[in-house]
Image: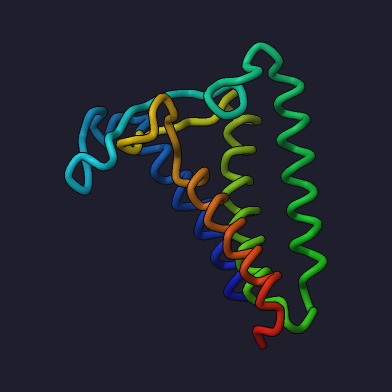
Length: 148
């Protein structure tokens, strides 16, 4: 249950921040944690750094397939013992990926809204970070295995 709620929280939190940035309620150029994070609004119609933006149907198909496979793997962990950590990571990935997929379907692109100092040319959103975090947690869960 905690894993499911974590995935839902990832989706809702990212959608909240995206809506705030889209409505200009979070000021573009504002910095957080000193100057580590800077708000910068962008719509990404492709994959990372707008790659393949000229092929939106292919991008949507690929992202949908990856989302479906991750969701399927998450479902396979339900009811199985020794999979809590992996399940949590997968739930975070599914919830965050659902937020980005929702943007692609409803808006034609993903709203990205912050730059991390030292990471040139890439604009992120919370879901991007949560997907990476979820992947790391899933790998740890796979290695640790017995977490009941």
